[in-house]
Image 1: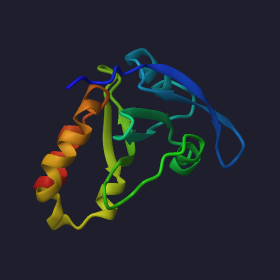
Image 2 (image 1 turned 90 degrees about the vertical axis):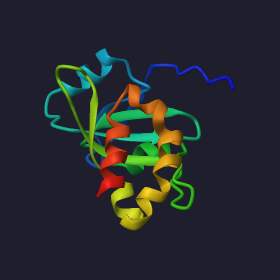
Image 3 (image 1 turned 180 degrees about the horizontal axis):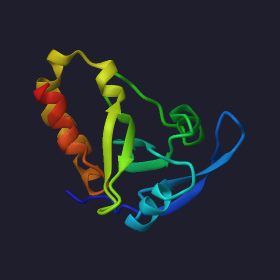
Length: 143
């Protein structure tokens, strides 16, 4: 099985509900993650992890997930859990994104987490290079 190469790039800007532009990074480098963390007025970030395209989007907490999802045609399907929409913080030392909340908390019944853990881990394990996604999934699994 050959893995698709993950390309890191600055993507674009997206305007928030107040028409203020904010950067979006796709498969960000550590430098880009830390740059976003130190941007004026940002305490947290939002991320979208698209398992179908193996794409990791990171952007300001001041931008709703819906704006980025619309811009990149990312559709969340609860039945196959192809995209993770999450709130996160950035560890200033490591540049790692620490997921603190996600659509999984609100879309799946807690009793289903253990059953889906292996599938989710396999589907999203590649994103661990940017974030604590595996630890986050274990937290969901273990309640």
